[in-house]
Image (cartoon, rainbow over all chains, first blue to last red; front, side, top):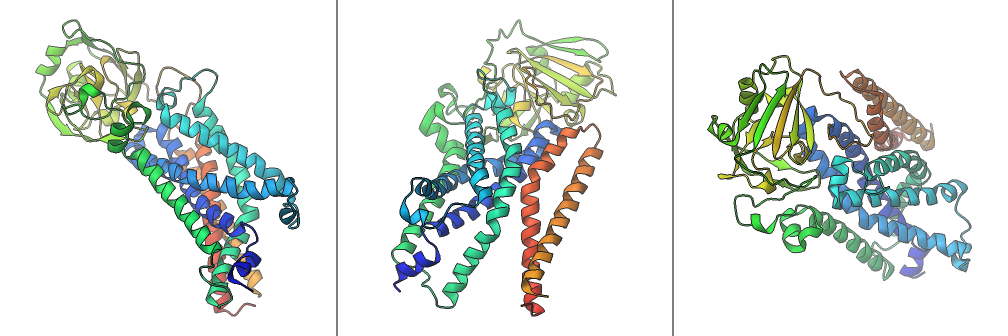
Length: 401
Length: 72
């Protein structure tokens, strides 16, 4: 028996390829589902903020890296699927798939298409994710979440029916090689498969790095990719990405006031000059965006706790609602705002903020997603109610995650 | 015991460990102040990898144990 024939005998058609791709995909999906659970918790519970960045990275990198494997799995499985149902003799000879995969696999394939489509949609249009605003009748956050929830039983059934035989198949292949029953690199089938797998792996690495490498992506492909740096900011103190959910407002520096109300001794209206006259601290704080980029600018401005003290904020206050000129809002739990590093930034990298980056003032707190760092503040409302740790998945323009 | 019995016992053991772990995590999350039942969605999403890891670990341990003890 020739090497090629031996390989085909042991793994008819492309079953070995399907097994190898399936196993790699399973490992990446494991990372994605673990990070998805954490992502789900962190996204709605900013008390766990410092771990958010790592979770995002795992979810995004694993997700992007899995795409070539998923495409290869669709192709590899689809070939056998189509071959059988189009009555190609060599596929028909192997008989029909078992009942469970026959019923569930198309559902799983459809569900994963929806899952990846909604995921990629959010990656390109992340503001729909953050602000949870439906573009038309499509709700990407909810679609992604429900597709992942539905994927759990489908995936469990699929893996349950395939994983053991896959592991045995792959171990059996290795054992056969060890015992000299088959060549380690059959020619040409082995080379072809290896070349294909190498392409898939290279594609996975390239895709994840290409999308996630802010420096490369935004300079090469401009607005198409995440982490856009406006032309006017490049080379200056604001040379890092800009994300605005509700657009930016034009600000008259002399007319602008920051209102501090709610559970305070006396409502306050601070002008820009009042704010920059307050004792300022300078901190280098990383800002990380859920869309995938991060930057480490140096921010300057008064501490949040000092401004709250100035207004006589109730010491038992539980949260503060930050509202922007563009009508974006976020409610912060009080504890992170009391830290040394929580500042109302008026300057970045030594220069006054531009409107792109939040002029006249924005909140900056280390260890939390950028979506929490409201720009162009106009109101801070001190509240006695604690922000509920409740992953509210309803649609709302008022971003109080 | 045959190797097959070792394998089955190992996988079953892994499944039980996974179930206990997921139950413990659910209780811990629900016990956190201010949480709602929605946190169980996270546990649901973790179910497949946790069950997979525990079952595979149980299978691996059983395989080793079976070989050491001379299972057929």
